[in-house]
Length: 282
Image (cartoon, rainbow, N blue to C red; front, side, top):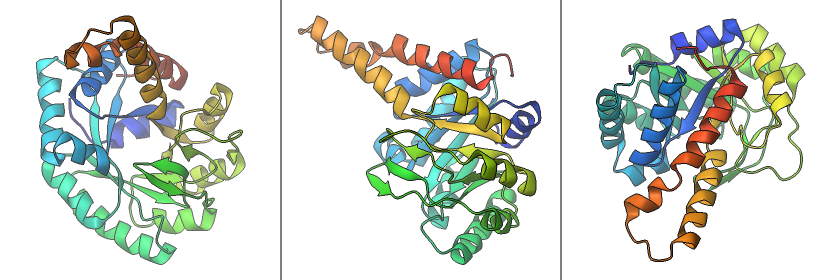
């Protein structure tokens, strides 16, 4: 069932678990994620970056793939199709028009006033169409889609101002990074809890890969209701595919190559569902 993220994240905030956001990169990954989450009765958010959308053929193609798989695989769990790190108002509108049920407008590279103004435009457009909106405050470090950023911690006051735009969820930059960590994660849990309590919004943790399980659980207790996971799945899938290619050097069927990572990626997904507490939360 294709839905927006409002009900699933509000429920997660109240009941203290986090809904997984898994980035999709192709048809097979989308299928692997949907099948595993459906088997475990876990709601799921399928995240699509601008780069992934371009690679897969465009937002309309992505939307059609997801909707078709939900139907053909008899998926019964709540599924949100979410634009990850939309870089402009126009990109968010394009994803919405293509059938996405949720969008993130990432105005973190702009001064706060501009971020607030553009976020408000996206919120107005999206809410008229029953689409949920995520926004970012501060700047999450690391690299995604080839774009590197320095970490800039979110402030409570900035989070409060951005929340007044009517956004449904907030991603405050509090020490997590995209990709792999260089050193130990340093999450500001005290500020995370304060932002959660003052804005009363479900919070989003980007860069979930590499954060110790204990810190993930603490983040959920401090108001995190959605956790973005991508690199971990990429590593698990790639490792399995490399081993398969080393074992059978004569293989050339791309279907066999891609499918060789299925078991590994599904195991990684299930491990995350157990950690986040979403199994049987349909």
